[in-house]
Image 1 (cartoon, rainbow, N blue to C red):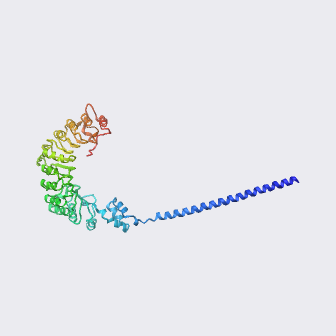
Image 2 (cartoon, rainbow, N blue to C red):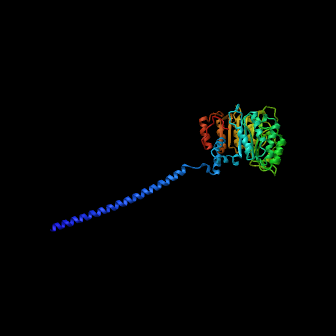
Image 3 (spheres, rainbow, N blue to C red):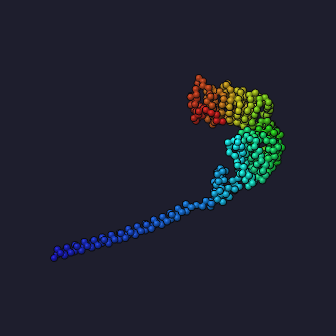
Length: 454
């Protein structure tokens, strides 16, 4: 009996334990099912939110972009691409005609029959004159060598009656075609801009038939604002004409002209107390036919007064002379900083450069001849303490003299462009050795040039 009772108790305890385990399992399953349901619901909501966001990204309204943003993009586009983009929608077309996009424009005028360069379409020119001429402020004309292109530029200039330009540039990409026009026709078109532009600050009219009366019109209307004037190779301008500009335009900071317009009176006018300090003066000394041009000499006192007034001015001189025409130059100290010889120059002249150009910063000699320039280079290195850039073309220099020149100038030679044919090996250095020796004195790796880089 006891055994049966004990067996009954054991079986009942086993039954209770199994029931408790079943209840616990049921609760665990319910909890798992509940958490799984919550996770599934959260995932569903997340997918819905993601789908909504994707729909917003996939259907933007480009027409609602801020016009300032579109304007910034348009300013980086070429004109043709900008015109195509303006056809996307009404908003973009409005931006295309905003004044900010038409303040700066370059007219490219080339004849398809004689030039492969692109040209501004005539219909676009009409639209610019009709709708945007009063917006133009910074304008340039690039013309090829044809007379027709120069005439087209003058035709556009004569129609700019409602504009107030700040800069104007007339650029001949090849032969100076503006010189082929009748002077009266060119002057008439140019004075339209001079009269209507009351704030012209920059004028580049190299190789044009501009004359003294037209410069007086320029001064009468823009004397307070003119800061830059480039007019090299303008044969109809006299020293009196450019002197009128210097006398009235006291804010002039940059000037480029031919040597025949340079005079003692002009330098003294640029040195007056009323005039601001000139920053850049470029002088082209050009002779087309040897012996036919007589070059005058500028007095040392005039140069001294000029430098006293503008001590930091860059004086740039380009020489395109024949050897026998250099006699009036480099006879006494001249404050030139950048010196370029485009034709052959003698040893004697280069020797005088070293003696008379203490402010020299850059020297380029395209040709000299077959006589070595050893002594001349050493003299320049000794006396031109600011020299930092040198270029030598068809010249001859011994390797030893060249190493000595570089050693004397040291690390201040930031630009050293020497053709390999210039260097003549000697007993001390050959072409392989000079590379290492020059590099050592410059403090950087240096090799001779295979082609001129100036």
